[in-house]
Length: 197
Image (cartoon, rainbow, N blue to C red; front, top):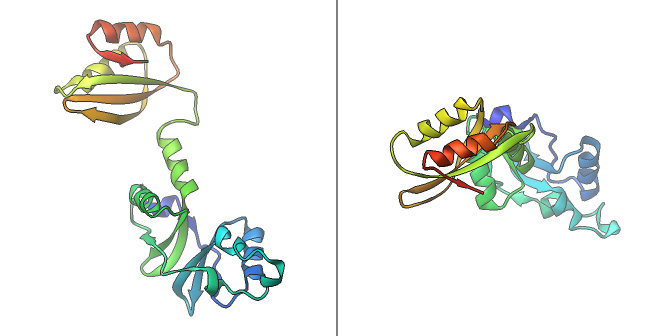
């Protein structure tokens, strides 16, 4: 999953000399919260709505400039990076958005909301699903065994995640298409598998 497929392309930008009032108006007009700051076509900063709102005295909105509040040399990500790489950068930097570069030019913005949308899609949380957590030993073929039992009951796995591991014990979370769970749980337990409530 590439960043280019999940970013907002061709972002609205602002110059460093723009006033806070001008930048806030741009954000309101376009319904956005991040503005890359460009000087002569070169990325020099990023400003967010929170940073702009820090100059909250009405008298300052037309005097303070974007360059006074922006984050200079902002964290960036390439358009060909994975969404997972972008997620790590956002998380580790405690950021709400990243400027996306493609061959050195500003190509887009990817935000925490965009990354969350990808996660929600992957986990199948937008459709009616059922979660099944199972503690498994790290034996070869154990996942195939669980999958075979799920399939035997007409279940369909939408996503699978390793939730935790402790030595040779692993907890997996299966996201299943909505189904009747009691017979499935009974068979999993009969097969000696530990189903977590």
